[in-house]
Image 1 (tube, rainbow, N blue to C red):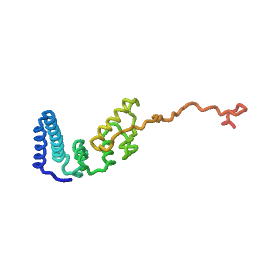
Image 2 (tube, rainbow, N blue to C red):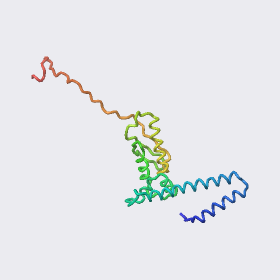
Image 3 (spheres, helix red, strand yellow):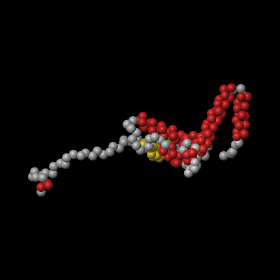
Image 4 (cartoon, rainbow, N blue to C red):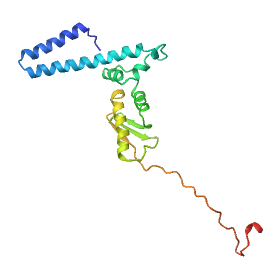
Length: 185
């Protein structure tokens, strides 16, 4: 990765914007300027978040100096975007899943397809498909920041296992063929 100074980057952006303006396409020029503004806001928010996390009292003394940064969605997404995140995909997937309100278990990640299979580890309430969809969507949203290589999330569905029914009743009579109780024998 080459290092570009702020001055070089600014000069290159200005050159591109000037070329667009010279071509006379006001709409394209305005769109390009909007893209630059949005990216500047995004990166500015990320840098502000890094400063906030590193300057917070909770970050001092840092047992894990990167911990607060890696746990933050905005910072994690910037690190992933530039290939700078120090954790591997399984660790980032686990980090994203641990932040979900509904406990889920990683049932397997296919790196070739980007599909992550999840198993819900606790009752989702009524077991309705809407509830399951909200669990799946929460996972998709969290994974977008922490593990963008996950392109799809599938919930393993199976009939929920019911606990075995234990019936308690009176014990059947142990009377023998002659009508006497076996206890008396």
